[in-house]
Image (cartoon, rainbow, N blue to C red; front, side, top):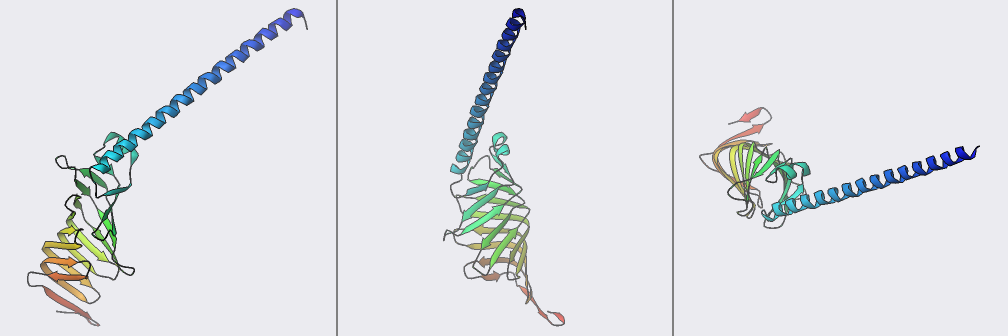
Length: 218
């Protein structure tokens, strides 16, 4: 190889090495900036979640859609909430959407709420409705429209509006109510359901229809 060719190749090799080092340094800078942005995004998200939970002290958020919080901090999609009764027993609530009331941050408007409460080792309570209002400060959960309460022992309660006071474990309503179970069907207007004693009191001249082997006895 001629001296001129050796000099050319040496210069070409040095330039190539400089380009590679410059490219690597540029890539490292991008990676560092990306890490910083990601860290700030996580911190920002946690701060928003913290502020949201501070305004609702009696409610714990178990499942959160981070993307929705970033753009709509007062609205959560597909959240899972945890509330506790006077014995610190957990009641979980899921909803299609949860939105804080604009005038009272302790009130959460729920869309299509459904929940679960473990009454005992052998009995579970499930509830569903179209709408719901959770007042964490007052310890009240109101279920509105097509309300259904089911227990694992086969009892179902259907009505249009109930109020659940989770501070005293009492469910009540003033509308038409139907209770059905393995024993029959009970209808009335207005009721109270004490979860501790599992006693349901119906008002408005309740009507009872019993089941037997042949069907319903009225």
